[in-house]
Length: 300
Image 1 (cartoon, rainbow, N blue to C red):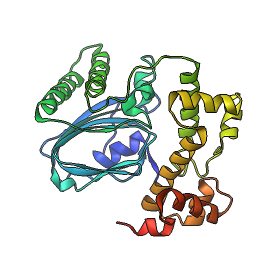
Image 2: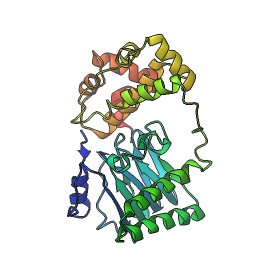
Image 3: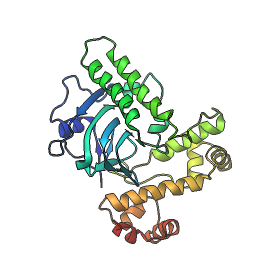
């Protein structure tokens, strides 16, 4: 089973030291440049969930395992990682250089909810292949970060926060993500957001979340203190799917991750995902993938 990497663990793994002013309980931001990207000294990215956010520009190819999705990057890409979804990069020998910033949620504490931006939302897009011209624009923003973080300017972290927002809005304005349009902030939208937050809070299954607590529409409606019909209506209007459909899709996504990325057996995965019997889990999985869990595990 994969574990959650803390900020302090990241620093020890990546650079072998922790900043003198580091305090994981307050806002933190840093930026790193690996140019050239040398595989022998660029330590690997284990498949894991991190408790911090990361925006990274990668020059060169590679393969990203993000939740249950595998993405092949041909030239260069801008990626957005959040604490809710585990990931790693493989085929790193194809990467020429990369530059990235990391920050925790407290860094944006008084500047809105960073999780509401599509690039950090569990249902959003997180990897964007970009053109050479777009890569040059993104690199220029990161280079400003590198200069700013070394400065003695009293308000430099305000500048860095704005630069991070600039990267977020850069991809949100790209045609690659047309599905994220401004939606009316009505009651149905608020219910949808509360439901998604409650659903995602149970994942990924790891040492902190050994078993989900809610897996039926009625259980979620009870937690949200609304009638199940009201929940179904709100989700149908805002997402176009029923509560049960959304839950099933998320359970399937996590099931694929657990089958491929952990050493849990099928009975343990069944229990972790709230199924009373392993046979029920197997039927659920096969109905949606046409494969049994054991056959899925064997696919490379």
